[in-house]
Length: 112
Image (cartoon, rainbow, N blue to C red; front, side, top):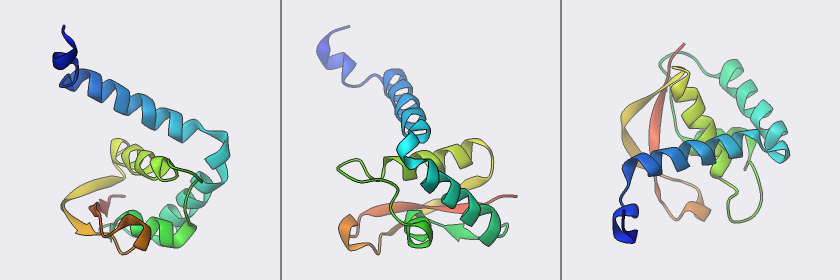
């Protein structure tokens, strides 16, 4: 496979995505944040409620520091979706967080 073809390898992209999410989720430095996120998720939300990353961060804060501070947020959402506890609602909304510069974020539905 040439270098150009490697740039568009969907299987490799998926593998790297899963690896990155696993690394972000396992990081000791965000263990407290993950516990707070789960406490919010299981204690505050009800079946059918819609949430996005802004809601999680508003409830428990930013997960980490530095350039990759939000990686674990995406990993957390993906883990919940893979476990069947969140379902993509089929739409996105603009972030309210100034640091996100109104970037788009997925809307998720809680599934219990």
